[in-house]
Length: 158
Image (cartoon, rainbow, N blue to C red; front, side, top):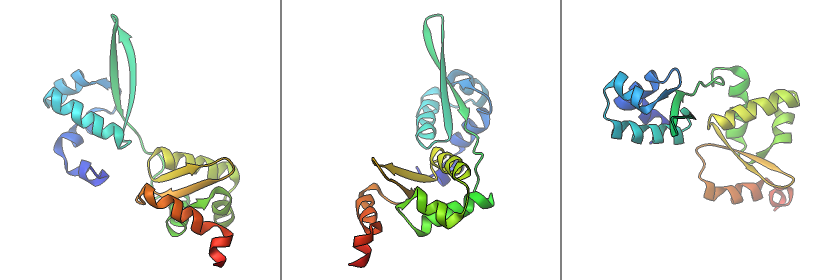
């Protein structure tokens, strides 16, 4: 499912609305009236999409998972975030240092912003021993090697 599909899915919307605090699936079921099987399927989809945080505890020897609607602090309406996303969109496979040169943001600010964008699944980061490449989230992973090689100086000159 695409992120926009979750907004159209009534069950997913109810689950996200219900999980403003950490809750187990059984409590979500009682609150929303959605069948438990459907809740578990949607919880897995929402978790994989990065929209839910999962925590757990042990109660009477039984592990209980709790789910929480993951707050997105870094929204594209923030000018700094939208600038970084724009740079990455225009320059797929761009390195950290190149983003810093183009944006002019201090290293700490940029590092924190990129980390949060990656956690929110807005960008994908491919890390190598001496280099880190940043990609927009819509680019398929099979295209990464081609884009990385195109960013190399010798490939540009050819």
